[in-house]
Length: 96
Image 1 (tube, one colour):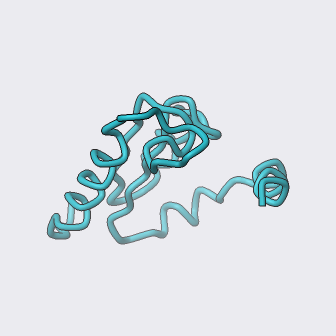
Image 2 (cartoon, rainbow, N blue to C red; image 1 turned 180 degrees about the vertical axis):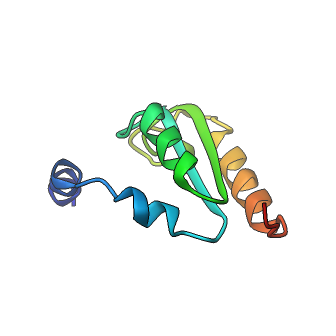
């Protein structure tokens, strides 16, 4: 699985700007500040989204998910992450 995941990330070609601009529903981009993508790239993507929400957390890649390999014992980050996702999903959709 690791090899497949690493190969997919290495060979990934970025999304086209027009594809991101065409998304007309609320979209949540969430990542760690020490993630695979850079915070700058996440910000650029979010700016192309009509209804984008961006959260950059002070954690490693997937640490906010509670991934066993990177999570710190006793970390509250996975619980906070779930709360942020719940809040995003509970917010009513509003046109800008």
